[in-house]
Image (cartoon, rainbow, N blue to C red; front, side, top):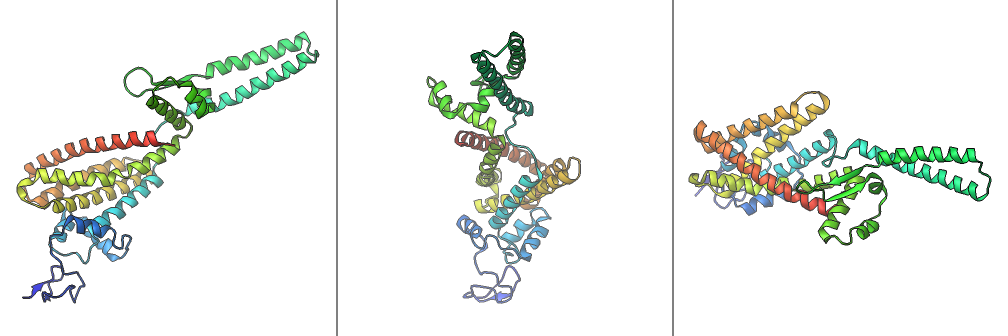
Length: 343
């Protein structure tokens, strides 16, 4: 018994593995989650006009997902592959068109720390010269007073600038406190000896704080690499949330997962454009892009699940409340792990 190719509607004999007209693989319309993930590793960086067709179809909320489960797949990039490409593109945009780091260190503190190193060297030099002249008995009283005055001024400035920096974990009491000079100069061995009476986790947190002070941008890059994993970890949770919200629709998990993949792709592309806009043109382009992405998801939910506007609004709000809870939890776990492993 012949049937039609779901992509181009050409009649196909049952033994055909591919359509003779468009080349689409002859396979069941409802795929498994295993097949969906498998698409990720098949020619993962393929770049052809299917990408532009996919983006054009994606411009209409939920249309790409509807086309996918209608069987028209030959002309579009598989969902998992499209998502991976978009995530990489989004991370590249964030890296290129945003500034700053995740962990903020006061510029005044860092400048003061560098200045303290110079002051310490100057004080040591003045003291060394003064001691040498005293040993040689060639230092007059006036010269000695001049040396004392210069050294006193340097030490007074040093004391004023050598503030203490405290690191708080939880509560109002600081976990660790260091002077700026210590943060600039203390070795990890000296730090371990100083905190030898503290529990291992306190010593670990203190050492990570010192490393973070010295290399805030390195920590930012380290966290950025770890947080990128959150973009992949969140997807199964998004699919499960949709399963719960639309359990009466009797859809398979993979159908919700593909929908989540597609609306994440649209959101990442919109936010990426907003970040680029903020970089070249002053204004709240990224904020506007974020609002547009929310509107896109709302319309996509309405079109894909075919429910009333009010019911869709309620589930849209529920989706993002649950999504926010899961995201915060994952980010907190990743941040803590990244901070503790930062080397």
